[in-house]
Length: 198
Image (cartoon, rainbow, N blue to C red; front, top):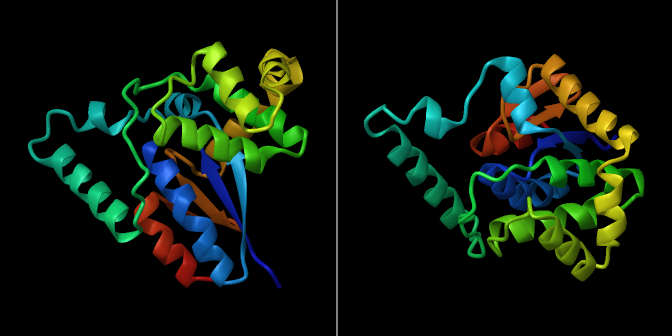
């Protein structure tokens, strides 16, 4: 029986991009599928009293430097040569994440995630800018203006809120997180452990 991995993500996390580049290929080798679940990282942080690493560990000598080393190792190991740290970071991803919920409702989530991740972590674009958002989605073959309008739909807003609350209820405190049934893993560096359980 094919197993499904829930991939809890927000475009604002560079580690979510790195995981997104690696996880589906590794899962495919184990005949598993990945289901992307858009959630708002800011909402998760607020609900769990968590903070981004640069704030939590900013005063810890060597900690952020080591985190950067681990990221570099991961990038090199998986040959993720297109990754580029976004110059606009941190970016408010509310628009992007609502758009993801709209794209999911329309059956276009995979194409949307590809467009959003590429724009954020390869092209270094400011995806909180509505004009940039529309342009990126149009180029990807999606209707950018329609997606932008849908981000104001109360049902779409509620969908993102529900996804985020459900993730917190499952134990999520940060992104990227993954589930196989009710078992959770956190962080790009746990993908190997996750895959080994399949």
